[in-house]
Length: 146
Image (cartoon, rainbow, N blue to C red; front, side):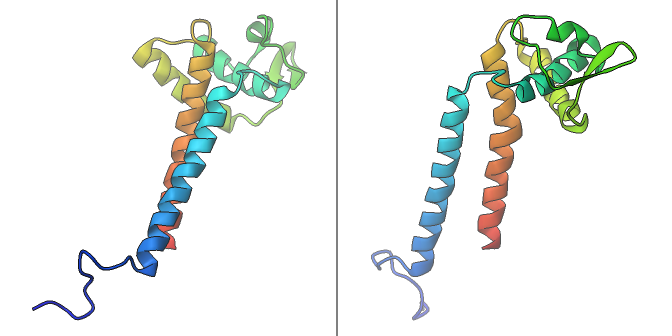
């Protein structure tokens, strides 16, 4: 015997089902717009970006926070730096670039792409992994809480 409150397959959708579909649609639209925008962005656009990416590159390729060599390359120089004991360092806090360096190291080791060989692809892949995927997870968790 079925419950009198159970929905039949042909019944119109309930308010909660409509709300659920709308939430998932908003999540998908939000992630699609963010991903599309990310894929259109040029890498190393600002001094702020370059400062962080210089640290990431120096950590993985040279094992140091010193960005002296990296910033000498065309397109990599930044004004967001400080000189300490004869060497240049990013003015940005080191925690996030260190985490991103771990992701860059994994990308280099797994598929062989580097900033020298695939600059746009590497930055977009890393930004997808560190921005889009956590955003997706946060939106799904938020949906679950709602």
